[in-house]
Length: 246
Image (tube, rainbow, N blue to C red):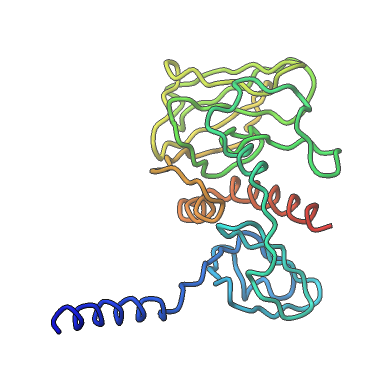
């Protein structure tokens, strides 16, 4: 009798567990334009089962663990419907051991006319903002596809330390010499072109852990204020999702 009672109790517990609703996966908005953009600002979390209503001209890009969803108005849409998976694109953008040298013009945008930064972990010498990196001891600068040899300078805010990096006709990525300019957490730095013009002001911060999923990485970039990289991630995955949905 006791054994039967125990078996029935175990069965009841298992049945109750199976009856519990499965938690909905959540995505994060990484890009929002159009009349309703204020309702879905960057950083908004949306469950897969949630529906959103958009107006004409609205475009909302949502990253989830399952893929990327580009939702365009007008209409009412379920967030989790048919996300496009861009695993190769995400892996390429976020590969930690990215090549130390990248050929000029080797990576172009979707229309094959605009050269784009091939890695989230390369610091664009023309874009100011907070830059998230995994390794502050190895910081690489990237110059958009401009031909010609040129030497850029990066210095700390006080001007006490600086390092020069040289780009040429073939390669447009160069590594900062940490012996000349140690990069510190939260440190503010100025990047200057060969003529001395300041082209960017950047602050470097460290990512505390690895992020293998696009939505998790996007949330970390948002939390740390790394909007330049968030925009690059959103634009790249959005373009890939739209191409895959054709």
